[in-house]
Image (cartoon, rainbow, N blue to C red; front, side, top):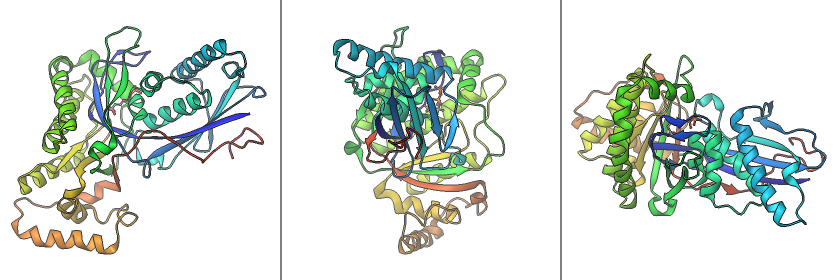
Length: 394
Ligand code: DP6
């Protein structure tokens, strides 16, 4: 039996992928950009094993046996096996992994209940673990094309730091891949607060939501033709120049633009709820208060807010965020009591100058705070989820 393991990160887009020009190959209607988040807080760990004795492909996700039947997963496995078969055809001494079955075991270090898109980290880890097992020589960008077929946004989780998914123009998707805009070290003081907003019902899944938008929204045509192509270049430049105010404005505008196309879909799709909208107003009020853009919100296909900021502005931002969301769990694991008291003191010193009203009830719409930062791409690991004796989950 042969086994390989990897970890893979979550990424949160600052320029959103929304819309497919090819549903089967997951080819997008526009390029997108994301920041990869730290795996200390959010990651998938996946082990993949292969053996001549395995009788079927099997997948265990967070302790439960899951189906591998989905067309997306099947496409990923077929692509990986084909690359392995090419290697085997060049070197007779290689074991014929491409013909053997796989056992895949995968675990997230965050509760699925948090409602955070885990498909990006999940497909990224699955594809990287098998690519490692098969000792594939392809670059991360090449491998990202396989992860893309699992879930579009997964291709961006193959890199750390700042990542672009270039939409490409080819019909077969051969140029639709993730590339690094800048490594983590280039802009390593980027941090993120995730406000997990309680949702009362299940949102429209992104896959079907984006199909509705593509087919019914007029605004969407303007977005993909005029708005995103310019913004893509501007955002890459802001990352290269580490210009937070520009990066932040583009990020907020793009989140709003994406949610506007959702509202313009027919029937309309609503991902933001009242709490999300109050958080949007709050971030604008904070930036206005400091007369400087120190924070940027962005929202995916759900009500959760991700707020990006630079570490040197943490006490300024947390004066407000700790005041408003200090009752919600997530702070104690990251900050000492002294640091938390300092955030409260900071608020006390500025509260006389406040030019907007604080909504003392806002925390009630938030179930959890995740305090994290930009992070690296998939990592090798000594952890292994598969027993060498049985080939089954440990
Ligand atoms: C709003 O990657 O989940 O998070 O390709 O159908 O699996 P599929 O969709 P998915 O969509 C993510 C949409 C988004 C924006 C983004 O991450 O860029």
